[in-house]
Length: 267
Length: 267
Image 1 (cartoon, rainbow over the protein chains, first blue to last red):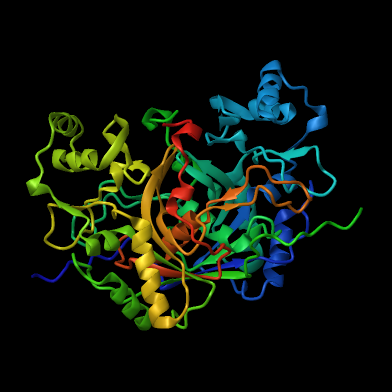
Image 2 (image 1 turned 90 degrees about the vertical axis):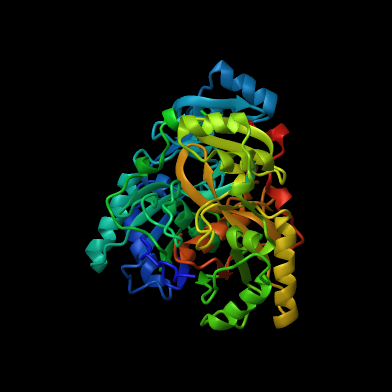
């Protein structure tokens, strides 16, 4: 048998990847300087510094939205009749549904108590990313919205890290999305800066020398999911460094990861 | 302002998670003792041993299928007319499509060159998990099928590790699945042993003391995605240890993670 061809893979990972949950991040409030808070948490977290060229910083959407004021006060919201009817039938908050509908470019499904919309950014997700839990003490009537421009949110954090530490660390803003056909949520990327959210290996030969026709790694989503494993859901850790993963640097945008409706069989 | 309630989270992660890609795994062939191969690779990989109670072993589907002989030889396959017509229209291999249709319990979508089926296990995925790339040198006409019972595949590996090392390490069999609405594939769990694939936090209070109504962590899928970051796609590393992640031990089955059709809005 001839020796196997061993083409250099497009992104050769190191032998190990480490996810470091950042500590010392206080409750984030509207108007807070999130980049400054994250820089302080990098100082406070053992092992986070020095930053390396193998690092990616993952920040969860909730603290980004809160810092940017991407929230809605439900006491100000007058729900439309459609929202009231759906809320009554399925035991939901009509005002929150109204906020979701206002944030939506299109309703994808509204049935079985579930409201799935396409947001202005192009994300298709439950409740348009509008979220009521963990918004902050004494804020029972406040929901977070998705950041207006999550790539720009990631850009700003990346620039602040580069200014302070002289290292260009890619940044991902993550959120928890459900998926059709499977229970449960996983963290995915909703904003990126400094990396390619998807890595197209379709032109690369695999280990057999065969061209891989349909292999596109959604690496930003996998980085977001890996970060979640160090964050937990209620532990109050909204950011993590992922160190040593295989990814490709570049000026990517989250739109690169979204399937246009023309290719989509489920919209 | 009153001090914030800080309930103990249901799964408090450690400050960091490490993913260790196992090295020294040769090309796996039909009939190989995969558990023995994995045990040897644990010995060969710096830092993998000693195993701890915080470890999960993630093994990719392809080596499991190959070891178990879950493959099909395309030269033996006579495609049905429907497969021939679809293959001609979309420049695909009719014999591979035939294999996908034989493995399917139901066709979910067959359009735009994409064949999405529900497998006998209940997975909804592109090409029913039938995969042509990286099957092994000189095997251009061989495809891998999904393992017949991926939970049992995971059970067997877990038992072998327990026998050798006296540590009960949960095992996940992973595969790369696409998702509606987003480009690219992410690794998810298709078989589990020793952990709960989904973690239901709906009854747990969040940091505000509010009950989280819709938070189910798909932790096995996140573990699979994290492992992929240390494996790369063409680097020939089919298994990884994830150490220190937040997960819940238990006798889970992958069926726990699959949404019944009655709840599903996209089937």
